[in-house]
Amino acid sequence: MSSIIYAYLSVSDFTCAPEDVTALIGLPARRVRLIGERTREERPIDRNTWSSNPAIPPNEEQPDHHVMAVLQHIENRPSELADFLRSHDSGINCVGEFRRLNGGFHMSKQLVARCANLGLWLDFDLYNYAADDEP
Image 1 (cartoon, rainbow, N blue to C red):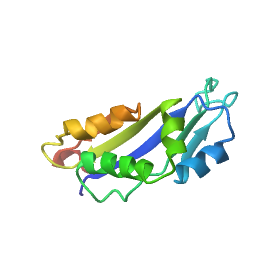
Image 2: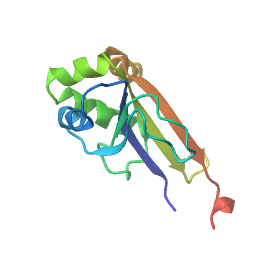
Image 3: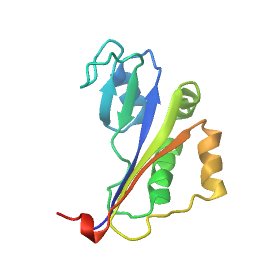
Image 4: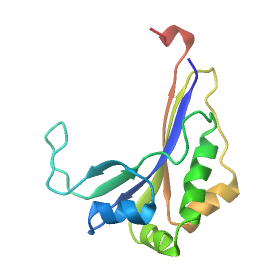
């Protein structure tokens, strides 16, 4: 089985309607959690959070390409989006399920600077599986 890698944009602490966030970002919502709702574990949600679908399909196996795709999407949107992201708790989540021995990757200083310029945090959830882990 090949690796599965994807990245998506997350925004928290907004007060507008989630539909307004979707319209501004220009990507479909993957998940929306609103204050007052409950998690599967019945914990109350204490902040509004919106997460997008990935900007590109998960067939590219380098996480930095997925992060670049999210940044490129943001940079191609109206400048109001960058302002919105800077004024909220916003970032890029990158998920990698690696089916190879070394799941390492590189983030160039230019790529990190682009994230920092937008005030975006980066979060990586990386899972490495060996052939022995296959069902």
